[in-house]
Image 1 (cartoon, rainbow, N blue to C red):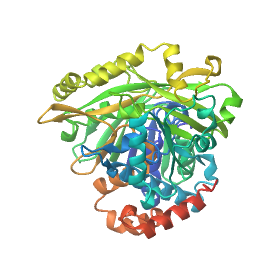
Image 2 (image 1 turned 60 degrees about the horizontal axis):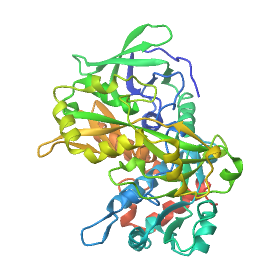
Image 3 (image 1 turned 180 degrees about the horizontal axis):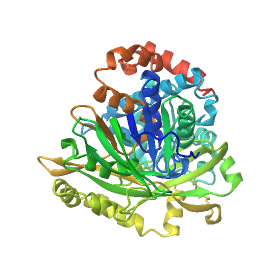
Length: 498
């Protein structure tokens, strides 16, 4: 989707930076809650959803902890900690409710344009990993958020669930998998385009592509002056905004630093790039229909959990395997090699150096990944697809992710995986940093922004918010009946019966 520059305003109520799923989601929430507010959205590329939200730049798993083993850790006593898995799944249910509202209200006509039911699986081999997966299954299977999950070590059953993975596999290998039908594939690029298309029809909403935010300064009256450059004409202008959201993916950190708010101090970023093997053989693609996640290597970041991934992109099935991590100093796929050095400040260099000192395992892993040959990548693929042929697969570059580095009084600095909302004390500016689960939890993240930045309006907005997200203010994990109702209604509305 592309858009020409629309109505030119020098003053706006809400200014959203970045044309991805985060700005699209927040813009939709705010326009629905307060339709008389003006909203301006600025995206530096000529089309929206071309960076992290693009379907080829992320896994699109609809992260709900149904298959991602990194969301369940093992305690010292051997028990499985499922608290993070419950939290991630709970957040994804909020996103499903929000998307269902958009379908019911006519803002999205056909949910299959962005979401498709795809079984989610965890797959492991070896006695130790099989034992872990069995205990993980036992810890999750009776929870309402994970109802319907199945477990098997039987190779005949595994062949039914994932024939491509089991084809020509050696007999006697110790294998196990969990399978659940309620998993989804989400095209967040398509979702972003649908939301922006709907927003553009609303009075007071303007989308400006090909515009880059150059600077953000606080004005004497408490508003924000944002200098924006038209990348086609070369002209710059200043827009005064009452509220700013920085949802620019990896570029959010340098933009946040420009604001000068105290909350931005001590924050740094660590960029990680990714690559996938993409299948070129339609017969191989057709032989697999699931998202199959394994266990990450020791020292690997959570985003590097290997997976054999059925995707639905622009109405056609695709098959990816990866990711293979890499390192680049760019903060965006179409960014600058100077992004990382330009983000270093006196107030965050201590934290960055502390993380560099303490992250040898991650550094070693990234070096190994960068030095991999195609034979190395194919060897990793054959753990999942034993008879994979080199000629059926090609290497593609995925999106950039920037992990958050924060100052820490004990360690000096810590590297955080996940997402982080940073907002000013007065709520006039909010930013989203970090990566996975990211887009899958866009709706609950934007509700966090609303709670932090619009506390004054929240009481009057609450009835509408409960219409958009029926579980708003409640936890589904604490209410089995509400959980069952929400899952049933969203499954029907989003047409996820398979």
